[in-house]
Length: 184
Image (cartoon, rainbow, N blue to C red; front, side, top):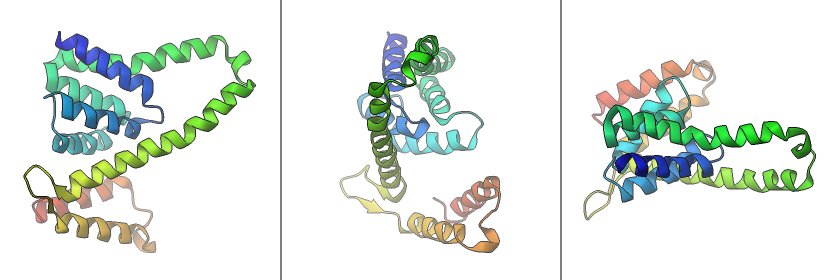
C-alpha cells in the first residue's frame, strides 16, 4: 500500500511542479504535514543534500523521501513516479511538436505558467527561510539569529568583488564550516 501512496503522491508532484526542483518544495512541505516520511526540518536537510549532490534536485529529493518512507524500493518508486509525468508529456509533445510550436493557446498557456513557476519558487524560498531561521517545533517560535547573521554575511560576500566569482564548492565548504563553528 505504501508504494501506491508513494507513486500517487510523487506522480502528482511530477505532474504539477513545473519549473524545476525548487518548485517541488511546496508539494514536499504538504507531504511532510500529511505523512510521517520526513519532517519539515528534514526537508531542509533534503534540500541541502540534493543541492550538493549531482543530478536534478527534484529527483534527488524524491529518492531521499522514498527511501525514508519505504527503503530502496520506495526510493525507486518515488523517483520513477516523479519523472513519469514529464516523460509521458515529452513523448506526446514530441509527436505533435510542429503543431504545438506556433499555436496561440500553447503560447498563452506558457505565458501564464511563467508567473506560477515564479510564485512556486518564491513560496519554496519562504518555507526554507522559515525552516532555516525559526524553530517552530514547540509552542513558542524561536528565531535563530546566528543563522540569519551567517546568511547576511554570505550574501554580502557574494557581492564583494575579490570573492564574487569563487566556485560554488567553496561556498558550500564555507557554509559547512560556519555551521560547524556555530553549531547550527
